[in-house]
View 1 (spheres, rainbow, N blue to C red):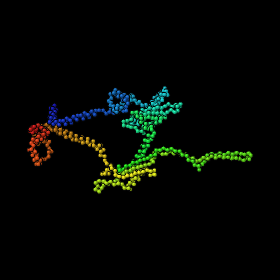
View 2 (spheres, one colour; view 1 turned 90 degrees about the vertical axis):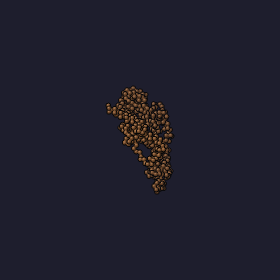
View 3 (tube, rainbow, N blue to C red; view 1 turned 135 degrees about the vertical axis):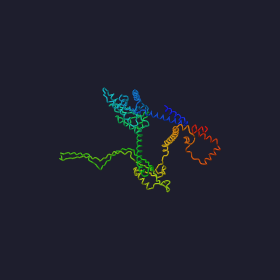
View 4 (cartoon, rainbow, N blue to C red; view 1 turned 60 degrees about the vertical axis):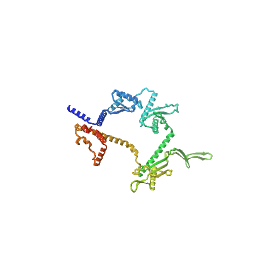
Length: 508
């Protein structure tokens, strides 16, 4: 008990000898340490959560939560209530158990509706179940596509009749719910139309209507044949131009360097589809088609009479010609290239030198061969050589560095690192002084004279040496301003906190 009391008294004495700023700093450090330990302990005690089910309907989510509440299982809801989290070590067991109990129901049924034994169904009920199964299978297939969260398919399949030959074919409507930030382009919508029409008998793709959850029709653009054809042609043209430009620029980059050339290709494609049929007759080449001979006897004369009939067929050739679509009819290639950069005589800066005519001619032939230029059909190439404005005149690497992008990317991180470093240095300095003062013996701070051997005098180490000139200036200033010098010395004594004994000697 005496040792504990002595330790407590010693600690109180040490704390009492600290200044106000040192006490505040020590209290802040102790509070931050306690809070950090408490947060870390809570984090260690918190059990890791795992995903039990995702993309749940409100009905399935409510049923699942009721069952988990009965079992006293800790749960969390995320993603707007469609995802349920439970302790990770319980996910597999609960998933199997809830599926076995039928808590999670899948409202979309397919052809598995016919798995059970069914007796006494009328033809009408069989047709209804077949339609329902087809809709369910299509829904499952569409929901498996990327970006589709949920889908709903409705089919209208008219009953065939021998009395109504002009009846319309089947129709379908599809409602899609896409993910956040997902936008279906026309080709994806056309693909879904093709998928549905190919799965239903007598269903034309134009009779498949696709909408989103806001009611907007997505299939309207694909219904217009002219618009769809124009978009396809434009996409094909861009693809051809991009392919040819990539081939040519790849060769120039190897020769001139990265960023030393720009190539644009303008391609004209032939999208006319012409079907023609031609018949060619060749009178010079004939063949016998049929020949007929008759013989008759004349009793009066006793002779024989012969008659023959020969039919000839003229040689005929029938040609069915379909012109090629999507072929290249004309190319216009524009090429811009940079020149050479060489150091001047003193080596201080680089001087731009244009390409020679021989080099330009070689590069022109390279580009012409790469894109398949054909002058007979009217293809053209424009080749220009001049100095690029973005050239790096000192490094010769092609493009100047993006200082704005670099500053935006790393500026914030650099400022945070500097602030953290300043805060760490300040904390280390104050904390070091607090710990050094707290670890000193109590007697060394309360007793002793200001004779140069005490601990307090160590705080004055590091003062530079004072020569005679500085000493004379100080004496002159002190003689002229004695009151100001006394105030300065008094403020030093108060800030240094020399202890009660030294302060008493100083007249405080």
